[in-house]
Amino acid sequence: MNKEMGNARRFDSAVAALCPHLRGMLLKLPEEIRADISEIRLRVHQPISLWRGGSTWFLMEGGVTLEPGKGICAGKADLYESFRTLCSYSVYSHQEQIRQGYVTLRGGHRAGLGGTAVMSGGTVTGMKDITSVNLRIARQINGCADKLLHSAGSLRGGLLLAGPPASGKTTILRDIARQLSGGIRGHISKVAVVDERSEICGAYQGEYGNDLGPCCDVLDGFPKAEGMLLAVRSLSPEYIICDELGTQKETEALMQSVNAGASIIASIHAGNLAELRARTQTQSLLQSGAFEKVALLGGDHPGMVKAVVKAGDLLAQDNRGCMPDIRGSGGGLSAIA
Image (cartoon, rainbow, N blue to C red):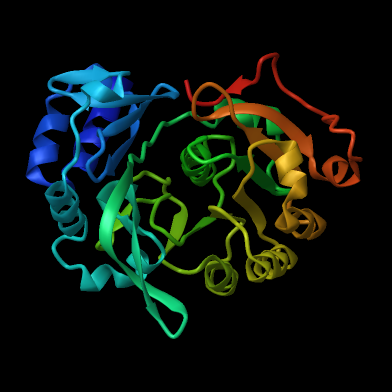
């Protein structure tokens, strides 16, 4: 199966969770277009938008357009029925995910939700009157981490992936897990993936939609802090991989994991090095000693690695905005072709 066909099939599996009306229109798109779409956005009474090749396109009958006025709009009934099918017609069983603004689907796809908060005692307990859905299509691209791993070298000192949303962080983490677990880089390693939102492994009812290699254990649905500590206690991993670090509790857990001998590979949201330094969590993460290197993602397409930087140099960097110890080829490292 070529890459284009594989990506088109992932698109098809993701849109299978939408209502029949929208599903039918999306599945009629040509294979080369379906293979290139990474997000489908539904907004009530607005044209259906598709994130494709770094630009926003709009769905029209049998194709796509760059003109919103020519796009097909999603009706309120489309949003209501799609929300129900995304939850497999069991909204109650997905309440905890809905409270956090998303629903995870078979294959690791994720639907972000917009709507009205349901409050109880000043706390958000759920969401109702859904007005938007952002369906993110998960992709497994074997080898997408090759150039990053070549540039970064050994990961035993830990690696922090920084990048804006939709920059390919989860896709690269998935391939790093596969390569380490499968011994593709020379040594078969014990890997534990703490997959709070079921995106890295694509878990669904006890089965994994993505290949993480033969020596990878998955803690699916565990909060990252608890999952890291459980992995250290029970699974003796050489590497722990998780997505989107952010809280102080998670920082404390990764410090305990490092002290137990595990190397951490994780991601964090940041559009550039200046934004990364400005985040309060960054100082704690880098000062923890868990990360020897930081890789900055961003560019014309998901997975472009702009720089690999020593964490110590980043900590010592002043406010002049210079970029220390950048390694890689000119114009960035294209990790996902």
